[in-house]
Image (cartoon, rainbow, N blue to C red; front, side, top):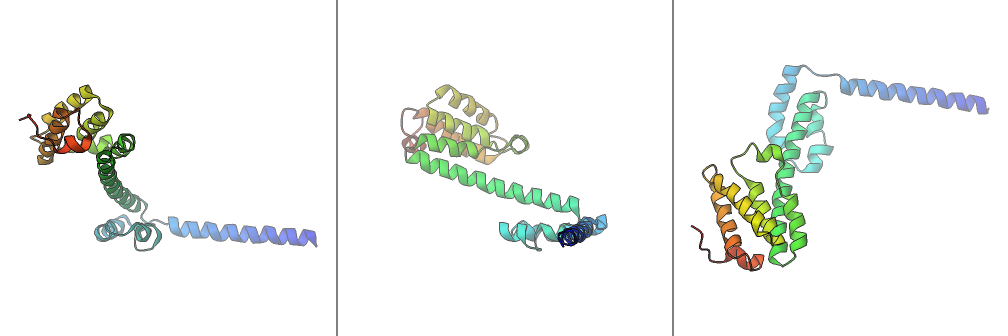
Length: 192
């Protein structure tokens, strides 16, 4: 009896493996590239606004393109970049709140998490990292690094209007270096 049970289990496992294999083959059967591109173009605007669970776990998000591997991967990449950007912005606001409350070490950790990766920073006229790095330098009380980062941002002022606004904050931090972040953020400055 043990032999027939064992061979029955082997047959059952083989059938299950065959079924899984056929299922994977069905999933991996790639659709027509032109059809994939059209479906991707239709889905993209809606999918990028979906809550994460819907985008990832339902057949309304990227899974509706799972037979179009390249387009599904591209959609996931774009969704992830959007979410990462939002997360970095939230980390910055968290850093500011912690800095205002006098928790410099925790603020530094959050500010570091707000930095743009090189591929974003290098392809944008908006220079976020020098602003974040100068703020981190202020919290570390590193006057030399504030000046280095402030000079980098000063060079980019003409490229994007927000660079000018952030430079004004850095001017205040530099001019009021001996004050707390909360005080320096709003202090009167002598910089032009």
